[in-house]
Length: 468
Ligand code: ASP
Ligand code: MG
Image 1 (cartoon, rainbow, N blue to C red):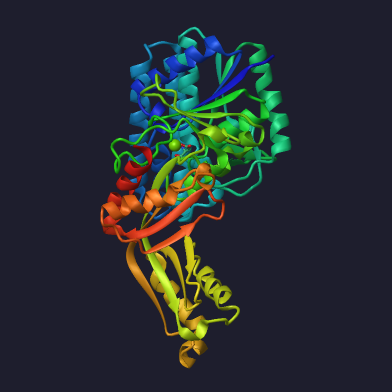
Image 2 (cartoon, rainbow, N blue to C red):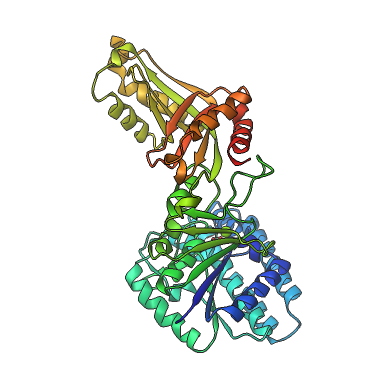
């Protein structure tokens, strides 16, 4: 049976000559163990940001600014190539690749400069440039190590719609194209090094899959190639039980289900975007998150459904910079439609509601939104409730600023009694006041609102109470 592994390297894992050396060592090891290996690479860390900044600077009319950014990008890539390669043919060819890509960039930016505008379509060509260079560097280095390898632009494999900057793959067409492009590489025993993040429409116009999209690339390829596993290499040991900056004894979570990943991402943990991993989760392909700077640690495995025995509490997260808006009034009791109209007014401001709680007496509705939207949201709700405010059915609409949401995530929470009791005991032990509570509709989470000043202590004490 074919055993295929997709290995994806994030920006910091291929962000310097040293990091790239580590990455190719890991690829070499993988090549010895797996029948087929596909590598997906990001741009060097910070390069995509700089490319986007470059295009925007050009559009803003500052010629000096964008030329300087291009110069810095040239320096960075040339110096990495010079550190990694002797003066040989691979080195010469890579320097030409860099020159070619950057002179394209300069030409594009000078048109943008003249037009004074950058279209999303042009932005996709520009922002994916770092991936194109990096794939070529890494394939060349693998060849220097005696492996057969070939850089592949994902425009040759992944077919998307034309929603530039966050294109959606057309999976049937993509599957066909991925297989016809990459299976022959396997046949020749070559390791394809595919550019992450970028793709193309059916007409071959470059698109990108959204920021951080290389994970998506890896998942798409894993799914289309019926891979046995997908590994994403990054600069942390895996998904952690809490942010290690808040909780120094946070641990790596060995196994997570797709639902838990979604919950974690929603509640502020920096993990994979659930959308990006859906293609492989659907096919039951496990995804590992591993650390290139600490490859001895196994990392976190994400599966469709985690083993029930393991499903206790997984992590404690924190979302900062929030406000709680309350609509209150004795006349609201039993009046249908108040909630619908309130949230309609919130939606018109484009604010996303993170949590809702309603007192059972129906005398108030409270909801949590990002702090920066609270003033507009209050105005919008007030104007929706103009009549009710006049009649005093609604007394006031007000915001409590400076709050955070602390969430405990884990699919096992619904089976294990007493988790909530332990959470509240931990908070009481620290004298932390809980402003509001919500149980996630999925039963996979319990969220608490506390004041921002108590946020870190709340995460620490809950983590301590549940994991120690
Ligand atoms: N280089 C792209 C970005 O920074 C894609 C990625 O890193 O996954 O968004
Ligand atoms: Mg990245």
